Amino acid sequence: MSKYRCEIKMNINPFDKAILSSRLSKVMKKDEHTGPRRYYKVRSIYFDDLDNTALKEKLYGVINREKFRMRIYDNTTDVIRLEKKVKHNNLGYKESALLTLQECQSILKGDYGFLKERPEMVCKQLYTKMRTGLYKAKTIVEYDREAYVWEPGNIRITLDSNLKTGITSTDFLNIDVPLVNASDNAIILEIKYDNYLPAHISDVIHLQDRQISSNSKYVFCRRFG
Image (tube, rainbow, N blue to C red; front, side, top):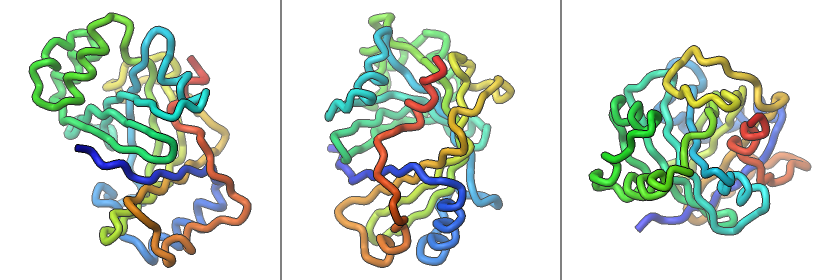
């Protein structure tokens, strides 16, 4: 049974990001995926149906909603994840499964029958949605992620910037596919934790007059198609 976690999002500016990067690096560890740079690149392709239900539910503030996506890191296919993101207000959890390159390519081509044979529930659920013929890959979402963790409280804080989209392109695995900026220097701060934020971390991420936002990177990118 997946466990819901608290999730908070804020839209911040580059000055905020510089302050938070300095503060967070002093009290939290860098995410294990971070290499020699201060960040790593995340590229996802999101799925939706003909009526754009996932997009509309987010825009209309539906309490219970879900999104499916495939994801790679740092422009390599060494790790490919299929994920389902489930949200209930400000609570959320993820279900995921690792895919091979061939499986990912097959899904993008519309050859998804193998999913029903996979043991992971997220695979079977995506198969059920895609078999209608109305549920398919919609758009690429790419950004740079700076991530910090605090293991005692299972706390994860990310700073996502340089948000780009492939507009209506679904050529997810083509690293050279043209992308366009999806926002004007918008940076998204995300805070995820199980039960509570300890004071020393809560104090670090406090930003005067910054409001919690319901915007998502997927919504930013779907404005283009």
